[in-house]
Length: 263
Image (cartoon, rainbow, N blue to C red; front, side, top):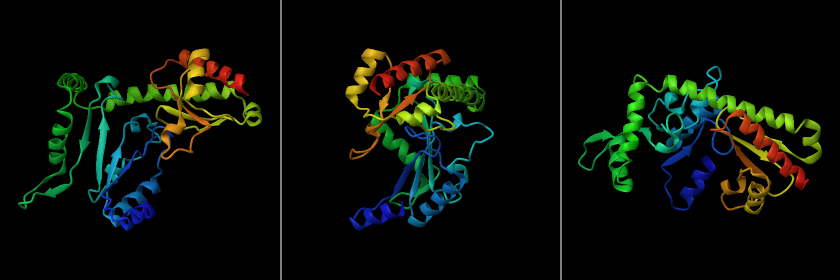
């Protein structure tokens, strides 16, 4: 980040914030370790940057291996925390929240919280979030006693079961000797909804169309997640968020038939 920051400054730009998804990022499933989190906070202080911590997947971590959020480690108010109710309550609601407790100053010298400015800007850009969606989420929070903790634990356990089932199904269908011979592999994230699979052939939109039409299985080409092209050409992203185990098994079997047809 220091190198990118230096290059941007050399071009006459003035970076002010850094966006990061530290827990089980989409699409990679990567997770920042404890030392990396401490280093990032120290670097933000050094470079005078805000960190925009987006945390839609953190609740899917095993409670025994959960890591503190950057916001909870933030002693200098460098972190603006972004959260969502969609993953825990109603995916279609698209209702989120922000914790922005940084103090900023008006032109007249008066101080207020950054959250106030963000609220005003959002109201002009989006013409406000659907009041019906907000009411639904608000009612669910009230029914939950004003806290997301219990619901998040239940939903987190569901998503962990799905992810574990997907990884087990891949392991059963593609044993080590087959993977080595065919050049097949995948990562094993500890949370989130996504697994990235590497294959010995290109995974483009044409193949996706063929996969859907002939084998009835969908996935996402990883090349879409790379800036400037050139990356992820032989990778695809699998998602298991809302499926039941039988659907996961069926999807892996259909995917396996596609792969066998091409290798």
